[in-house]
Image 1 (tube, rainbow, N blue to C red):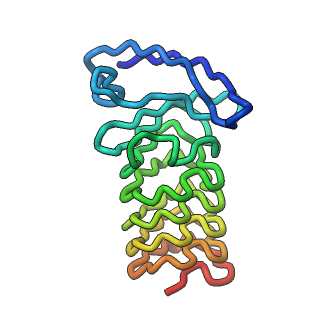
Image 2: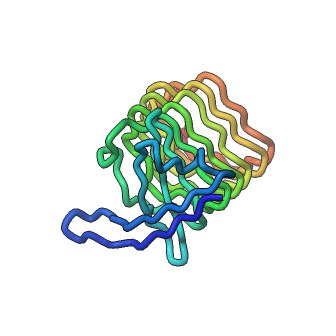
Length: 193
């Protein structure tokens, strides 16, 4: 396993979370946080009691691990290289509104079944996102969650999701969508087909 000790420092002037990160790697999980490969590391703000860290490797894969809900504290411009893939750890419980907005190079996101909520605009304007699977643990797909995703063609909504809100996929050219019988409420026009 990899032991990561994070001390968060709030930088009020730039409204960004900075961190002092100490990484102690052992053999079993070196691939997630390979300190010797020039990767970026940091602390990701979360709700009270959260402990969330991230790592961006040279291929553009952003690994997010820890526990709690991801808050919208980072923008794509603060990374040295474009984020092409997001892998969210299985102890993350939610994704805040606008959390990944304008991650224009994002092609793939892995949302685990531990995520219970995805906020409004969480993945809007991710123009290279091709497909997404929303786990059944997410009960509501909020307004404009995946709006303006120019490349989004396939959406799989898993059994357990109960509501899709107006404009959830606004201006996203979705061609294939799977909607389970658990969806009991669809408000407005969630798809712009």
